[in-house]
Image (tube, rainbow, N blue to C red; front, top):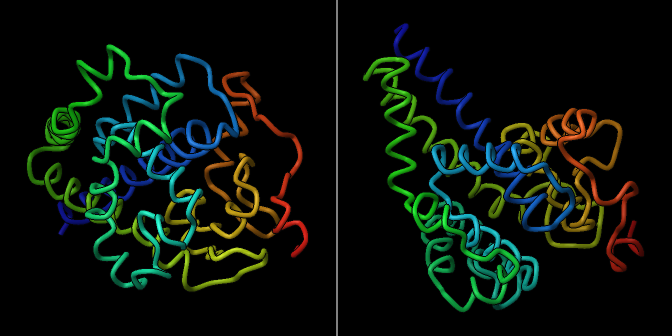
Length: 248
């Protein structure tokens, strides 16, 4: 019982770390240029993304930018409006991988992220990163806890990411005039990503919480980085899209 409990705690903490790296670095920093981070912090984020998710940065950015270019219309890589929310929830990984492997998508939507030598020899090897991550878990906590924690992490991370794309475009509150929704409980599980209606209304904002009662865990990581001059937020004020501004 103690082994299972420890594995659950470690797996959840590992997923929250991966979620923070995903939302702060992959999403807000690279995809939308809502903030910039100093080079040492960027390398830390890159490494953590690699060992916790195996994600290839250019692919993730390209798929997400295409989602914004074709939100819930033909061309969206993972729209529940087109395919149904349950289909996206259960098939999100397949849909992501299909689009991520499209060289035209990567060339068009991630052209500002050229492939570096580190990508070529290290970060583009997803299985190596994931293998290293699991090895670190096993060495640190033993093989039983390590493997169980990895199992919890994989299911939590993939399920949460799918929920943002599926549930986050179907159920929840719509303060702004777009097809995404706000779900605070999902935001707590995904480091802020559940405030998805807010994000689509102001995609260049580094802060996803627009009301005092909304909690954006990713922003709680960004603010200390700015205080330490390790990150810089691009816009000091909330800048809504024209459509969302009219609806607010």
